Length: 462
Image (cartoon, rainbow, N blue to C red; front, side, top):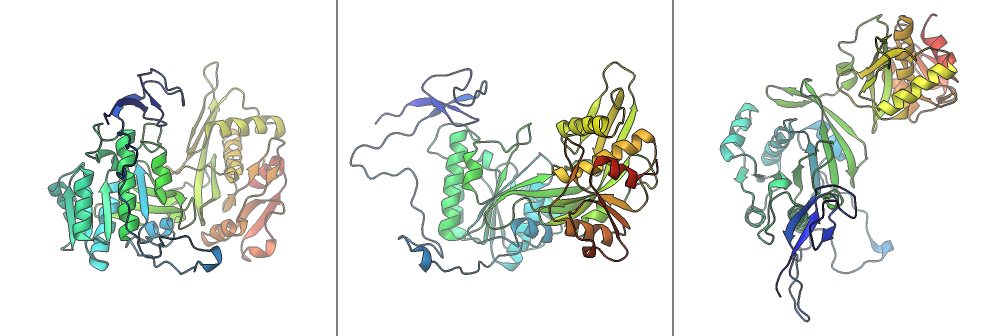
């Protein structure tokens, strides 16, 4: 039957027979792109749109009773990078499909090339398919990273069918596709990166990964808002979604898991960018506090949790008298709306006059903190800068601040206290009743507080 053209929204995937300036489903403007729709199958036809995947180990063609399913431990494969293994839940699961997204130039290709070289030396051939770089460019980066001779196969290709042919021919131990937005299928006439092409490429690579039991990494582009480009269905197809974050002007990078079918969600891995590639940081707290000034007003140390890992980071505040009619409120590393809420609590519940003051908040080192337990550190740093009095030396804090000025408990408090004690902090300000006093080492004093006023009295000598 004759195929027809439709207009597809590149944000939500909605289809329309004619062009629309605004998508009727999601409301996005100028996102409708013309694509050729798949031809319908005639009655009685046997043609299928997707190839039937082969059955990999542990997969059955028939339904099984729940009670008969055995829970065999999955053997994970190390990537050679301990921090990446931590984010993945202990290593790569055979047959898994992992999506890695991040800003341009953040180091996604470098990270995966290092993992590919380790896989090639320990597990067998690896296929690295790049649609953005030639083999010579990849080899040049590999020499800088110190990659020696290994069964690592490079393929500069954007055609999906050619990539699948090479996977079937080589039977590699690992497949890397850099990036999914550059891959196109001959079944569609739309441009690479369109919603139809991305969905088709991800689905066929999923079939190849599951059917041949090959772990596969996909590199994804991000939009200007920091979200993964392409349809949302792409994140549903894959087993794990990792975000590669970090400031280009800082040496450290952070890999964060936002979806993981084989491990903990919100796990964090910290890397340091060096001249010879990315190296894992076994003690991130020491890295983030290395350049912290001593006895300076407006600096507070926060005990935060990223997945199952406790971290100590510095929260800095600068409060100065506004020279204009409207006071400025700027935040880097925390939510700006959360900052406005905490400033209102300080004015109403603690009696601090911040109406005519410019307030600037920064999480040192380029970290982004989104957990409520960071509230007490922000409050402490703002009050310290306003009064121009430093927080007592050797003190760390954590706790959520409510609208009534109360300090609420935070999860996994014992891990936070233990990390602070290991880093040499002698006092930790914690919410009242959040942690038993016998869970802290003998040399570390736990000070419990119930509201913002008590916390400020314990943090500073007014």
